[in-house]
Length: 460
Ligand SMILES: [Zn+2]
Image 1 (cartoon, rainbow, N blue to C red):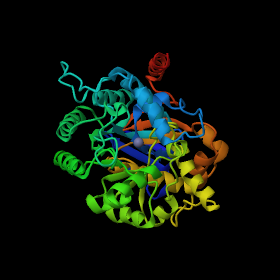
Image 2: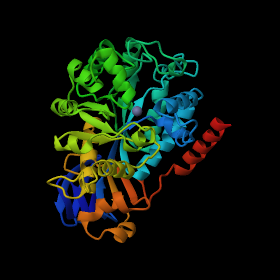
Image 3: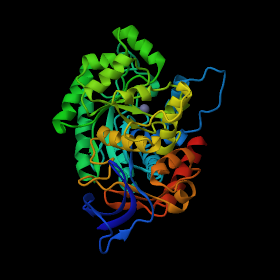
């Protein structure tokens, strides 16, 4: 299939008057001019964004924890509300939420998601019984795979290894019983998900040791060894330094800060993604860059939960790789993540246009290209850029809207990120298939109805 784009953002910047040829979901050629028979894409074309961090079920209670009590609300009080909420969720509920969420993601420009999946067991904390389809351990994972398939989003499934309530192998609490697996049971779950990923198109798997408070070195090492025996480039994600209290607890237990402990004890590589590397010193920043690992930053969630500010400007100056995620889904919008990424730096430094680069003066363009490429690396997926050989994951912007705030390509992504007042994305293609046309998804109405019913049931 051939498509013509008047304006298209390639890896080295904007280009005009191009035909892209797509074969079996892959961009096989990009040529000058309009090829005969090429379908015209109606607006500027940019690469789809990769969402490096999602806990799908959390979308269903986004906004439910914004009522202050005694001035003592924090990440930890939010977590208590989250545990109460998830205690009621069935497998079917999880699929309804994830499908609605993934459709919302596609409409806002995320074409792939890394699902940091830790809700494994039934409401009593028992492993789901095997049904006729021989699922048991992977029942909840199947719900996520189905949601991704129905929505059309690309999925990197990251089953989460969760064993303890805190440093020093503290026994898990009641709210955590649905997350817990022995290492051997977890490795079986990973194997089951690996088989599933072969059955569902445009999916792959990795793992996520939850955090240094929830797993120890032996368990991390065994889990990494197992997943890498299935796929030697499998992504590995970990929550690392989201909260100051987590850093303090780690210092008390391991006598090291979390990122430093990880650097000193585990061999990192370019397929490791350190989610919320929020609280890091300059030595840890350099250590992440030297290891080739990625920093996974979730600016709106980190703001919402009062986590802290990642030193993005310093990290990018070291040539660090970053990706963005929507995490708790308080916002499902890559534009808002990137806007906050820049604004947090402006407010901290009392400067402007902080996250531009020597090669790319446009903050918006620089951040979009870097976050998409970093996200692709964090999911080990052939996405995140429009180039020959890459998967055709692309967004077509609405020219009626973009013409109102940017008449030059050099300003386009700045205006979209900092000045747009509504969604500018018109059409979305994933792996060569149109999943959003004219701002709509084929299943959006039925999905929204199911989701609204579920919310009414859960809050009843
Ligand atoms: Zn998270």
